[in-house]
Image (cartoon, rainbow, N blue to C red; front, side):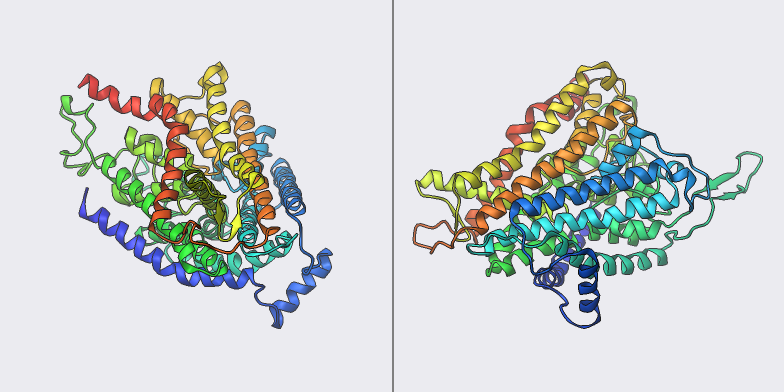
Length: 574
């Protein structure tokens, strides 16, 4: 691999490490009730009175879960209604018509579930009002929901004999107002300074230099920067434009590209430190951070390596890309020339580690094994830093399973952070882990078995199978990126993927909250010489092994039919 890729990767990791400290402290203050006094405190209390919320009233896990479900279901209805009526609403300078029912359903579920899968072209489908009042608002609320559930999970480990795991509405308000809104505003201004558009203008028609050779070009406008900031910060990923982060108005240069990559991981990394702080032992948080970092670096190196290799199918005809002067260093197909192989490979690894889904290149054009890593990162449950909130609570579920397995090995009742893990907790952890593989594999099996599913594939054979497998992996794990070769804006895929997105989000959140409630009700158990230490290298290895074993045992057969078979075929022909 090139030295430039390692320099870029090192710069990113150093930035992430440095940002973990302030973001962790910020999240701790929010969880503990920032601000509580002053103008912001008075405003907060006024909002609670207006909405009939008692901030001192805690919620049981079942009530917290019901609040999450109802709040987000209402969000689906609002976004669906906005799309279905946008032709008659203001802020629609291009006069776009109403979105079809199946596409509106898919998009509403997609943005509410923090998936942001897009079967439509943003600049040719959605009005400015729909983009702002529907999609961008849900970027904030879905991100706040994920962080709120992570807070509830942390309380499960830190509270003792408590029937409450917090108040969902208070959590969402504080996360949105005290972190997501101010940080997004700052980031939007920085992005505008780099050339990103932010306006309400009608689209601009530009005459080319050689009007005889080329027709006039229409340039899309709109309030892009404000949506892109929360798109990355909240690990949402839905692009304002169809080309997402490869569009020059959505990602103008190398600096904006690096900033967007950093924004994806800032809150997930900070949550690890916040977990250690709130648990009373910083080492607990750093163990999670270290496991995530190790898995991320391994996959980032893998993607970078395979994307910088020659395509063996091109060598016999003299088109070895590694030696070609116009494509030095490997596979430039599907890469934005402004960013090249290194920045595109790193971006792909970051966005699929988190439940972001933003892309600055075409994953469909990656080499077979280069595309395998992003797909597998999603299939691991996106716990490698992961989505805002979902990465932490997903990794904590794996930690519970790892401790349980260790307890079986030594014949002791498993404990994690002083809480005994009994049958109820293990059932909830198993349910949370098993939901997404069932959705991914069952959905792929159905789609590949029926003509209406196969007709959406752009490519036949192993690559076409990978397109469908990637789509359901992305939907069920709430990522939202796509290989790009699947024609998914059809009633079949809009319905199937919409169901996968909703269940992949909330059928995981409910058992996670049940697990948090069960743990919060327990008393803390005193540590003994027989207690498994969970703050060292040994447990980090066990935790990483649990994540990898789960992903390997579940998905290797499907991956063998897709990217692995595609990789081996040209080698056999060569």
